[in-house]
Image (cartoon, helix red, strand yellow):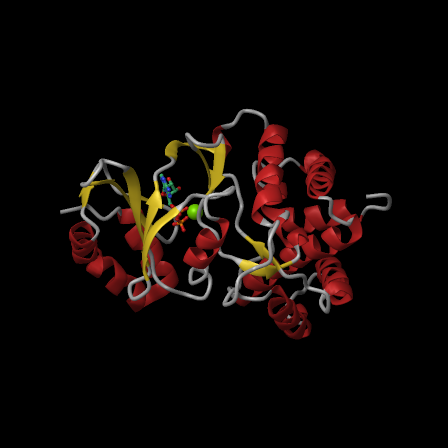
Length: 296
Ligand SMILES: Nc1ncnc2c1ncn2[C@@H]1O[C@H](COP(=O)(O)OP(=O)(O)O)[C@@H](O)[C@H]1O
Ligand SMILES: [Mg+2]
């Protein structure tokens, strides 16, 4: 029997309420089913992030190290196996098996002790992310992936009501500017396969490549919408423009469009904060200011 990490039970309860509790309660038997069905043997303690249980396993047939990933199916996680299959290991972890009924995945095992966040240099880490994005966003998104255009238009529809709930005029102005930038590009949202969540704890060291991405919440859209996590990782305000330039250079992106889509990520984060009744993080506003400085 496996021990379910208490933090995972707590975050599931917090974010998903009854559904989260049921997911946690069902995990031991779900794990047992898949160990049997896919002929696996446990090979270490379960790991977890905010949403998923990840159990190291070995394939009984040939001893291949892998991990079993179990998470609730929702609109963000639904595209994960579709994207991993499309990438076929190029820049991302390989999908070895997938059960659509329970959303359970068997993934190639990477090195969980070496996340990109352990790399000493923050600039080096940004270059790793840029290099991975060059592979991940090179191709068009397959069918069935959520579309950035829909998300952008939904954000623009929500913005006026959300802004009315912000008392501070300066914050309101910053977010209105973010929305104006998104409005300029919303009708040309792009069609590349995006990871969307490539922060430095979703990049692990590997054997067949130095670093590989895990845990996509994929979208079909413009790669400019991928840059915000690497601006936010190990935040250093004075490095914001260096990081933005390094990524747009590596990816060959038009800077004005990439800036607009990055302001779109800041708007997306702010709309979630407003919806949940949280203050908008100072850092989000600061990144927006840095990107909008003349000459930036
Ligand atoms: N393929 C893998 N190989 C080794 N460890 C993994 C793998 N995938 C995930 N993990 C571990 O499990 C943790 C949570 O996985 P992740 O896919 O990021 O889920 P979450 O959606 O909960 O963040 C990771 O931080 C990592 O430690
Ligand atoms: Mg993760």
